[in-house]
Length: 308
Image (cartoon, rainbow, N blue to C red):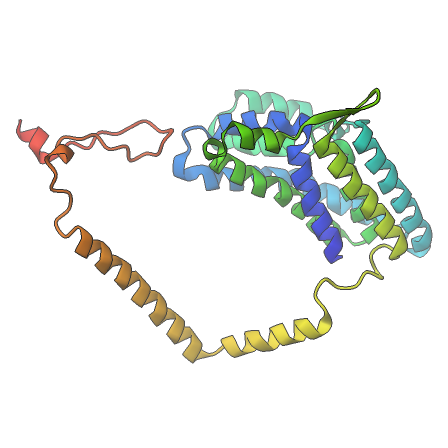
């Protein structure tokens, strides 16, 4: 199922970047504004909200698929055809919003609108994982693969990886939003294009092609069972042997000493460069922003200001 996990992660990335999921970015920005160094905490809480919804869906899909393991051939055939249909629907923009069939989603959205801080971020995660008209076929494809696995644990992990595919680029985008500039942001959003009278979007087309390719691969490899491993067995054995060499007390001691030497060298270099701290008069009485770019600035008053 290595390819299944890769597909699930890429599906999460494309679901995040899909046209209708673009509304998630402003909501997440509003939830994390002034968070500063707590951005990682907010991202973790957001991911927790995703897992609360996605993992049970995955486990349920895996349990449903396990009922048909005695008819595996038929299950794989139906799953492959469904993946191809979902891929075509994604390309042409024939989506659906899965949140409308999941109980409590409208209530969670209402609470997220009035909540603040980490509570708002968590509720945003619980609604973002299954929301989005144009992201519906992507989630449906991942759930189809999860159901075909016939294993609740594997299915739950697939949906967790799908959520990670949404969280990782979201964290990178928020952290690099300003350096990206207008051109970088427009590239992330993708662009629409027309063929005849039909209107398409680059992200939706990429997602649809990925789903169709997964469906074809699913069909030709008996549900990925006949798929060769991404890393061969010989390579895995060599990697395990190499890891065994590293599991040595001498190597551990050497690594600790190397880190200690590196930290000491950095400290000594900084100490040599500025032994007595800033001596320039312009630093006296200056106001230093210690809370991050988006947080309120706290004034550090030097002794020189106090004496005056």
